[in-house]
Image (spheres, rainbow, N blue to C red):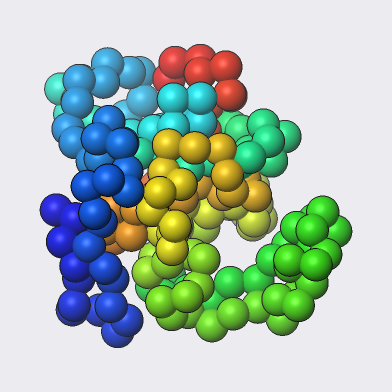
Length: 183
């Protein structure tokens, strides 16, 4: 499941067993919820994203979330766009918070193995507008299960490829508050 991927335009290395705590590896779990199958539920407090399945089950993915609660998106959104090997550009807020780190990248980076979004991105929109939050891969697999990002939800590269294949544009995403209220 976490072997190297060599069928992509850029190589994706294997996830080494000591890079990620076992509880954050993808698995099917019991997940009773009122949400409809096909919905993605993100639980930032637990550091999991769930793809709701039939029969009270879900695929659970370990995630990394915003390093401060205020960075995290909350509520409902729709995946309005999907991209393979997306380009990335820091938001104005990121540049303002960390000008030395993000200022030189203000023009962005093309997709590729060094891009922080990894091999896939799912773009969250609300009321027809881009929220600037994404579910995406990461070049830092050891950050899964932590609060580290500028607010986006990062998954292991193999996991975002798996999730990307399973969900169409129009998929509903529910991001729980950090308190972990159930869906």
